[in-house]
Amino acid sequence: DTAVSQTPKYLVTQMGNDKSIKCEQNLGHDTMYWYKQDSKKFLKIMFSYNNKELIINETVPNRFSPKSPDKAHLNLHINSLELGDSAVYFCASSLGGGELFFGEGSRLTVL
Amino acid sequence: AQSVTQLGSHVSVSEGALVLLRCNYSSSVPPYLFWYVQYPNQGLQLLLKYTSAATLVKGINGFEAEFKKSETSFHLTKPSAHMSDAAEYFCAVSDQGGGYQKVTFGTGTKLQVIP
Image (cartoon, rainbow over all chains, first blue to last red; front, side):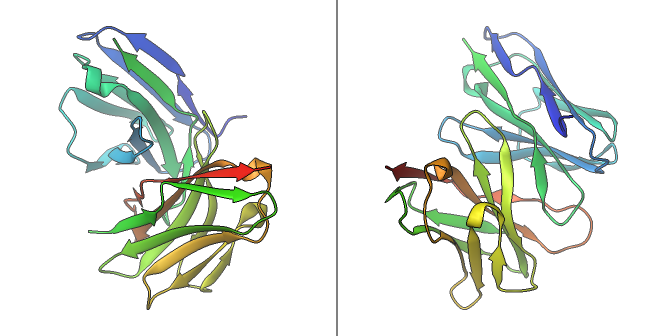
């Protein structure tokens, strides 16, 4: 049973479209994150939720909107996709203490 | 603000040789420090973490790291490299504050192991 699962694994779409990525964790953790990894492998935190409450919101365009329906799920919706949004998006969860458990990533390609 | 700097974006070692990946940190409060590994097309997984107990931390797959406050360093080592160690390695830092932590990653070091 996968601890942190993301869907879809791959998205290919045109500029201007809207897309969503879903994440679920079965570890019972209270905190979940979205990270963006660019083509140079640089990892940047985007958002974090603790028990459905937004606690970290980095400087991210407001075209990106996270939603956490419950503490086991964290989704990411992206409006009006741009070329620069192409990246791998990772979901992660944590029990605290900074130790993160990552999903396998969702590779987004914007054409 | 906390940060980590990884020295060397690419490191090549021969199979059986010592692996040394360098990381220096900057933090205004006592840090928690981590090393994560990322294999191709996978998410990151924790190798080891320092949380102010022992300064020498042992992790999975034979890796270890030593916290040196005087040098603000947390270098990752392994005595003998295996082919399976080829991957991207990330140093990371968070503060020790209670509740939820923001984890900041370094830019990564790609380890190549030459047979």
